[in-house]
Image (cartoon, rainbow, N blue to C red; front, side, top):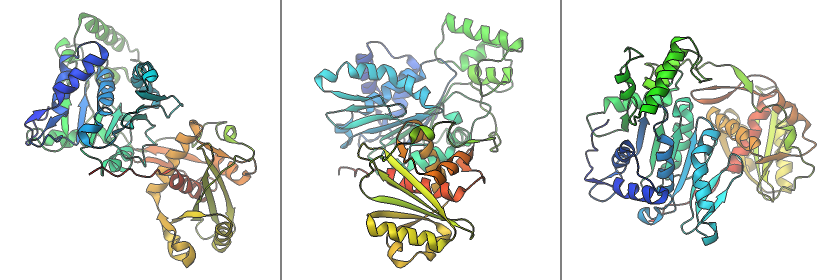
Length: 466
């Protein structure tokens, strides 16, 4: 555990514990109180000391319970921090986050009659809003954390989250907030990305300085006997006879060569070491991985709708196909809040530019997002509203398209034949930096469309109250 922050003179941990225990009607475990006391250390001005924390234990000790209370506590702190508190909760899978939040949604719906909370339960977009302050606890897929303005960012089962989702997506959204915090929680895993490995490694170097990221970890030393019950306890801050029997049974299955239930790691011994001894690997897994379709079968077809009724300004993406063609992508918002997509290819760059100019003559074009290498080839009229786009923007857009498509947040007309084919052929590879588009089919059209989508989806950032 990192030593106390060098500026710390106290903690809000006691206040948090009273809130959690009063709300839930039960006592926190000793380790949950400890983590709260450390995470919420404050300086002599009453300001939070830690900007980021890495918390790691073996499975089934109460991490989810603690995380749920932290998110709820934070959305009740608008007065303390002088602005609405937006909490983004992401992780390995939205389903994992959904299970953490589910009891809180049930609790909040019980208070809706008093108009204390508003609960939204759209698949992949679940949230709880504290109506008195406008603070929100929002669930989002790891690929869809871009564009918000976040007071608390939490990443659950962070071992499988690409570093780019936090470093390029979540962390930048916290820059303008008052005393924001980033919390990474995870049990170890042999195939961990660099997100947890790098942050944990850096925190270990600062363990005795009271600077950097706060690290709190329970784990057994690497290389010991997997049957050592003392090692089991080192990784488990919460211990009961029932837990000992559970781990003992898992250990027997491991010795028999049976895989511990972990679809991400079929090696029985390594899975046991990660889940129950919380032993992190010394280096990250190789970044190369198999390719997969951008969208599962049938998802894009299910988003087809005759005349969706889009209104308002249009965001345009414009990309070259290595000098032998070009593509135009368009996105604008429907009157029901969904985003309508369209896109097509052209034989050359000049034809694509002519299409955009013709489009701008009939509707308001809000932005033109153009491949960085082609920015100088835009006419002056378009360059005024243009922004260059590169690989990082493509990763963001691909993740956003996947997330919104799976949750029904996008729609396309029945006449988007070229775009239908492009999306059907689009394959991606996920590695530590996010989603990468594989060279297959008209990738320039996919890029143009996802750039336009990301531009249209970006919300207005709420300024901090001074």
